[in-house]
Image (cartoon, rainbow, N blue to C red; front, top):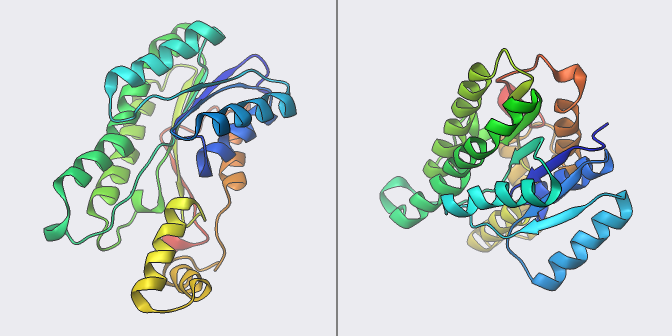
Length: 260
């Protein structure tokens, strides 16, 4: 379905972003990966995706806190692959602390990576999408873009902001072939979430598996983790003609979390 299209996925050397990149590659899109990691491991990842799906795969190590590097990510993708048709703003970080204890530098970093980076990438890519009359911008928000949890002030603020930003871009492109939507996953067993589980187990002196069950039971009625593949499937759907009139939506994939 996406043969001849080019997709940039931020924060895609692991976790949700890698799952999305693989899903788009599976539909024939050329891929630009972004993220930190061991250069040899990233080279192997590129080769594996390219060979498995018969697509071109690049990597750009843009730091998502640096607007000029984000602009260069889009510029290099356009220069080397000819265009950018799909942008998935996925990069994100987390820190947990009460507001009065929240380190200022963590607040700034979370807002920069989880929210501002999406603005800078979207700003860079929109002109060419509008010129061609087709584009898909998908922002990976969170259930925390719709509801809040204690001790996650920066993350919740950033993800709520991302949902709002999604709506504005959708309104500004409403009469064009460019759409902008957000996906709001619940708990996905990524390294980010695994760290929270490990911290909980250590703090409470309980087994990791018990900490995992308790984490799900607090928020996610399905008692099952969302998978990166399920999120990738939604991204692929949003790139399809069936989604042409889905605009400015925050689509929850959360095992019932926000239905409560």
